Length: 112
Image 1 (spheres, rainbow, N blue to C red):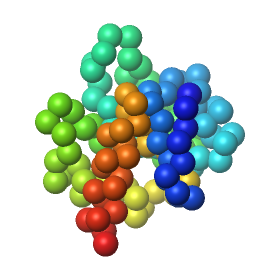
Image 2 (cartoon, rainbow, N blue to C red):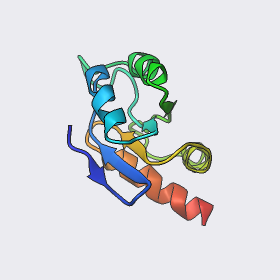
Image 3 (cartoon, helix red, strand yellow):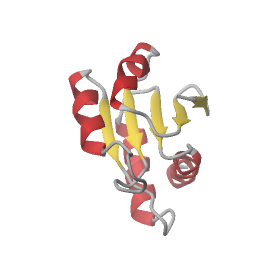
């Protein structure tokens, strides 16, 4: 797991697994946003599996998938709402971290 800090409140990573959630919580993250659609690649963990364990650990989590069509106005609005409502620090993840970075940047512009 390669976590890259964007600022004090938001970091990104590539795909995480259920087994990594304990470590993510131990690192102090309080919420998660998954920006990867289910079934993007064979063998990829399903969002529901990650969500179930995250909730067991007391982490807030939301699924805002960014697919082949890229960012949508609805997705950016939802991300802005999550950034407003969820506890920080927050970890966004997708396949590589690029979509989680892009939607965060757009949501910040939307909020501003």
